[in-house]
Length: 102
Length: 180
Image 1: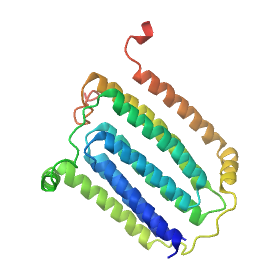
Image 2: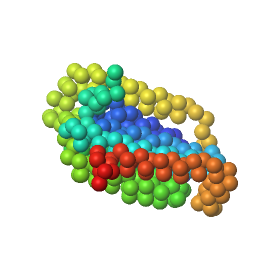
Image 3: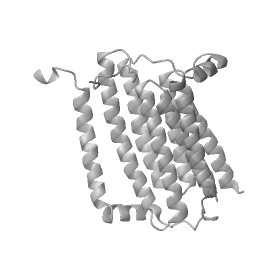
Image 4: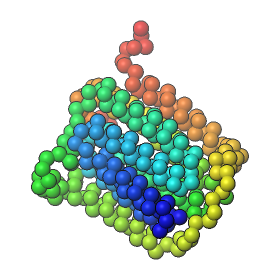
């Protein structure tokens, strides 16, 4: 069987990659993709803990399903906002989008 | 070390390489395709962890819906891509990383520190050495729990999806189209 520490290490590296991308990239669509990566690493942790600690009650899997729902909603609304911004200006650089800044 | 563990290691390395491709791919379209590959790898990891329903949902939602939506969004909108960190020869990439603290060094330190901290906690935590035997009907018990204990969050999630659907339609509607 797979050691649990391997799964947690995979998830930690994946979360680190997503966090680096979300902090360092400037394109908003790329940042959205990196956030999806981070949510996926959380799902991997939930699945592993549910399997190793409570295999008879899959509450971790249910929580992972809810995270998938929220991720899908977030991607849909985020992409709609970015497309609206990209229609009015040519780029979606998060450094230049400051409409809400007073 | 058995066959499942070796298979897990292989799939995990491939998945992490695809995730690295998402972050550093020079073109936005390639980045989205790497994202799809990462999602497929995650589904394989879910299968190896005995969560077949989650793997199917992952393929359906992430690969089938989210990746396709991002690809269509990129193709339909003529987004001018910005300079990605993976562009140029390696010395220029390295100098850009070191010279721009806000876009390179600081995120690198933050994310690497966070991942190392998680890993350090995970190494010293008292995990069970051996996994308990798998539950015989995981998918059935997911449905049982979802529609008894988590019935209210399930309904709230459906309302959330409806709100996101309406919100996305309203946001991407062109100005003046409601007058026609």
